Amino acid sequence: MRELVTYSASVTVVYHLCYCVLQDGADSHRISPSPVVHVRGLCESVVEADLIDALEKFGPICYVMMMPFKRQALVEFSAVDSADRCVSCGATEPVYIAGQQAHFNYSTSKRITRPTSADNPNMGNKVLLLSIQNPLYPITTVQTQTRRSVHSVQSHCVCLSFLFESVQCAQKAKAALNGADIYAGCCTLKIEYARPTRLNVIKNDNESWDYTKPHLRRDRGKGRQRQAILGEHPSSYSENSYGQTCPLLPLPSNSRYKLSSVDVPDMVSYPLPQSSCSYSGHASSSVAMVSGLHPSKMNCTRIFNLFCLYGNIEKVKFMKSVPGTALVEMGDEYAVDRAITHLNSIKVFGKRLNVCVSKQHAVIPSQVFELEDGSSSYKDFAMTRNNRFSSAGQASKNIIQPPSAVLHYYNVPPCVSQDHLLRLCTEHDVPGFIKFKMFDAKPSSKTISGLLEFDNKTEAVEVLTVLNHYQIRIPNGSNPYTLKLCFSTSSHL
Picture 1: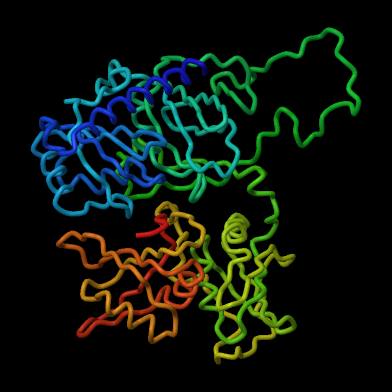
Picture 2: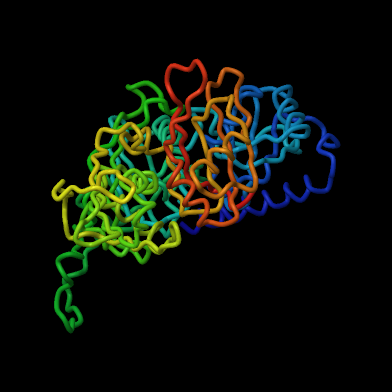
């Protein structure tokens, strides 16, 4: 692992020197044109997939190298003409990557150096180096068994190394998993080829595991051992207790990295989260209890609009015996965990929400009554198409974010303008936005998206609660458009 740390530090120094050289020229065109483009100003959560999505319109991309923690990247196009289009476009008009404007220069390099000749399948490396961003859950050794490869994992904090059976297996795994989240909205993988060509695993435990040698253990020795005050360690922390694994989840069918069904496994096994300081294991039920709800402005639909950002919503029921309190049945206990983490203690319509785990394990539609706004106190959302975690493909598109003053809007018809959205806020008696940004859309796109900035986080929460999933009808249109809102990764516009 010391070699990996040294390698990472060396690469970081090289990146820094390259960046300083590029900064010496104020005009990007003073550097001779190159097929390699230096991208700056990226948001912290950007992944390779975001860069390819935004820049492939300029031409085929050969290789992408992320610069961890620098918010920069190098992108190599197949031709100089493609790179020239990218740099020229970025100089004349904004180019957004993952919702944030990026800046472009030619690189002084004519080609990105691939670690261990990654372009050549016969000379590549079968060891991958992983860094994990936003690690809300502890990461230990995990088995991901595929048809053609067996992984050996070594974990130290948020850096891991994987050894594959062959270079081809490593290439396929990198293509399929780079940029994926181990858990929804966190523990994002960034994968590069490592410098070492082998891993030396001497024991199977929480920090290292050789799946070709399942019985590998480090013997404690048969000699005299020191006396333990409390005897043997608890059974829940035994050597064989590494946590249960979740059911197999399908990879997104439309993933750019998914190859044929023969080349890439259709199923990926993710482990259930273990307890940590951020997640104290408080979610023992898939039902959340929400109190502090405004009696006339909150109803089942508005609770759905807010809570659906953190997991599927099955049912919502207001409690007749406890005014201003509702039970929310979610898809699983981890959705409840996310809702508690991000929504507990926020203010909505002047009242502070209290979100906690309910002792109930299901919401039963009993004692249904009419709320102050005339709607029903109970609603079943199990079959609604507005749930955003119904499949692995859907879940992978969600970025789990805490409430912020900037909302991301999407699935809006192109004819809708800034004034139209402002009128919508006025008509529904919610605060109007102070800044507006519309993303560039492809000519063939049937919808548009963008960002709305509000004076503060509370205003954005109220607008999302009221207008999320609002049906926008256009003249001569057969079906309405469902306005979709979520909290943005941007803090301001």
